[in-house]
Image: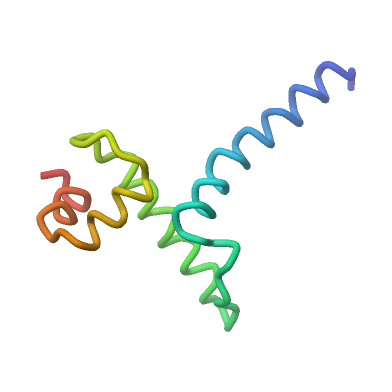
Length: 86
């Protein structure tokens, strides 16, 4: 494998790693999570990823994911909009 091809592969890997995992850590505090028992850590990771996807797809307000998450927690109408796209 050439150095150029290897560099492209590494940048591609870290691009997706930084894009998704950074957002999960900053918005949901995933790295600080103490959930370890059984399969709970994997289950909560799936729930966090689904929530991140729903929040990113909600386009009615131009807000960051963390702000959208907090707004959905405080406002049931906005939560419904995030969940059902209404």
